[in-house]
Amino acid sequence: MVTDTQNGMRTSLDGAQALEQARRILPQQILRAMDNRVPLADILVLCQGKSDWAEIVRKCNPIWHFPKSALADQRLTLPVQIVKQSSFSIELSPAKPKSRQKGKIALLGPAGTFTEAAVKAHFAEFANPSRYQLCPTNAGVVKAMAMAPESCWAVAPFQNITGGVVTEVFTGIWKALHRGSSIAVTDSVWLPVRHCLVGVPDSVIGEVTEVRSHPNALTQCEESIERLLGAIAQVSCVSTAAALAEIMEAGDKAKAAICSRKAAEAAGAQILAEGFQDIQDNGTQFLVMNNQGWDHAPTGNDITFVMFTTDPERAGSLDEVIYPLKEAGLSKVVNHSFPNGRRDEFWFAVMFLGHRQDPVVHKALKMMWAQSNQFYCLGSFPKRW
View 1 (cartoon, rainbow, N blue to C red):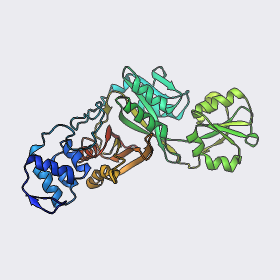
View 2: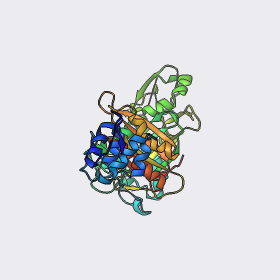
View 3: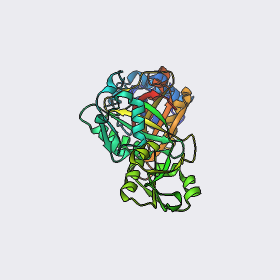
View 4: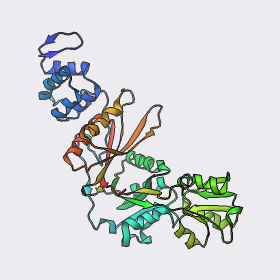
């Protein structure tokens, strides 16, 4: 017997009646979970202790053989490369030790960027410049890796402790996934970032009227610029190394750049101030990605990375996707939202502690998948910050 909460009557329901009542009474997030064959025990958790919902779910359970999307109003659109649409599964595998020895490595150019330092830190003796594919933007780095016809790696910054999230990297990943590309995160690199203010040979800091660098570097040195240079012109460049190249080519003593000491010394620039960043323990987190579906084996201190959208018409839909993490006691370490090209619509990037192979994490991922409109798992990798 099931209570019909709309008219207060108790009636005996056969299978068809149970499905019809489910459509009328149950919230969309529960219907979507049923629609995607989520296990009964997990769906009962979504009932939040409401006995009438739980009874309807149990009544429907024996006949969950109906066609896909027989219940829910909106179908899930999931990338075949990472999560199959018909059932929940993650098509990723840990990278083999020798895998990083082969394939191109996409990174931000020109030579001398902090990204190149991160590449060398990760690939060590396999960081051969002959493997480099230098790209003009961080979004271009992701695109080059994703669209490569053969095995390809990419290293790109995703967050700085001063400047915050690197939006173009997250956006590049999202766009690549929507093009059907397979992207997985294999590892991360924590790189201490020490900036130098540099000029052309024989220049002095008192003559500088313009400073150039990557927007993130300018943000990381905002207070130092104000303190030492005052309200001077700030010009954004595609990278710190590109800013250095531009002032060296111009030969103007009034123009300075913010870059690494190594890049300045290689170019023969004059170092005007060292440790120019506002926070002395400044650092940037980089993602090491590939287009082969390789993530990292469990280490005991791991992060899992997901991207997803929710139903913008359903109140509380974001909370419903995130709730499985709270229920499982999994802490988020990165949580960002980005506009989705339509009014009041967003997509989300979340990183949380735990490895996708852990049973509790796998269960949480499955629940998140069931509550999302689109869901991408980019794998698990060591937490190195």
